[in-house]
Image (cartoon, rainbow, N blue to C red):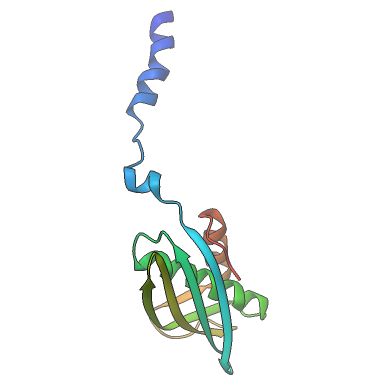
Length: 128
């Protein structure tokens, strides 16, 4: 009985899934956000990072910036309008445009600013 009690935790720990090499190696460097108010509720975000695994990482960084910006301005929601991306050397850049609003806007790519900012903090993605 005592042996089983001592061995069981080791067996359970051995069954835990180890992170893949891609997950273990992901160490992005977030190089900042530049924000421009275009007109009314239309806002442009220029985000730059190094070490993005895909365009999705840049999209998440821009969404984090947009969500925090919406909260700073007293709004609760944002809607993605468009994003263009480019890479220069090892640096990835995105130019994203969002609308911000106090109520949930229509459209497919809407975000709840409070939820997104909390998710960004949990995942170590900086905001504005």
